[in-house]
Picture 1 (tube, helix red, strand yellow):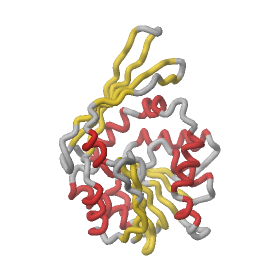
Picture 2 (cartoon, rainbow, N blue to C red):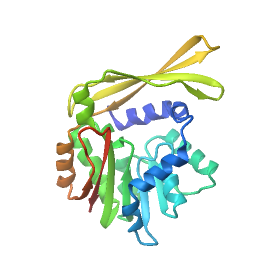
Picture 3 (cartoon, rainbow, N blue to C red):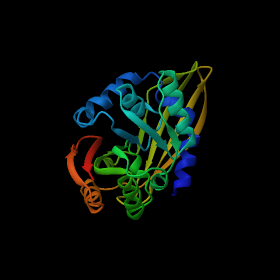
Amino acid sequence: MSGDNVEKQYDSMSFFYDVLYSGVDKRAWEEAFIDEFRDLLSSLPANAKVLDSSCGNGIQAAALKRNGIDVTATDISEEMINLTEKYAQSNNLSFPTKRLSWEQLPDNFDDEFDVVFCYGNSISHSINKEDMFKNIRSLYKVAKNGGKLVIDTRNWDKVINDNVRFVTSDVKEYLDKKYIFTYIWNLNGFDVPSSVEILFVEILNGKETKCIPSRLDFTPFKHDEFVNRLKACGLKILSDNYQPDNDYYSIIFEK
């Protein structure tokens, strides 16, 4: 697994991001994101700058901009940047976007952001512990002194303990076609490269099917170990909403 692999994997999935989010009230997702971090965002000065460092399809960056925040959106995948720009334009919003890996951030930005978001379970695409340290340090470098770093992640403790092998979606409808998708988890334990195969099945003529496979690589990690890594990067915990039975959690740190 490498940054190049992650970039190619997300580039190849750009169309299916639209399928995955079909029927979803994206404005409601925006509002939920703002509600989750309302206390943090309401404490920002009027001229605050925020970085969404793994912007995906742009929902979080658009939510920030819609709430009057000066946001910059980056992602390792050019296709994800395209989705972000498409979503922003469809909502009459405008903000800077750039295709950058985390490693490239310090060469493109000074320590200028009041808040740096790493959202959507993105940090798990780090190859190993050393790569995660490197990625977190890059995020750390572009935050101001006293700035905040927010990392949102899947609860890998729960995923591995539950040991669920397959997850299948409801039927999705997009551009007059129907789809279902199945996640096939290939888990090898904590701090060991793993993957999830995503099989998108297009239903043709109501009876025939066409299968389009995709794959995402990641490295699961324990919550407690993750917190220790963040502390080792010089960050102070402000909040941690981890709960053993929750699917995701977010940690807010201060530089």
